[in-house]
Image (tube, rainbow, N blue to C red):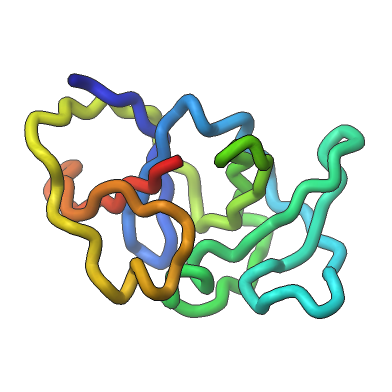
Length: 135
């Protein structure tokens, strides 16, 4: 079985998400803060009339807050029917990965820190571990 992924980096860590979940990749644009939102919710942006919540994925995973700048991008994904923007360091490339066996189980610290489905952990892509985010 093969899966097509979009890779991206957060603080030198490589992550990937199924290409079918990605709607677009956009340049960083400042967000409008939401009162009383969790700290990882950076705010909302207007995406062609759609109010798009934007989350700091690094902070959500417990890796620290990202201070966005012009180098960051927002990856717009649709997860469980909800469009969400993910602030990431940089978008990588589309890759095709053969899934021959399940990756390592997801570390407990990620399961506790993040409610987003982390599908597999520990896949190697050019010698680096990759965390695959699920839908």
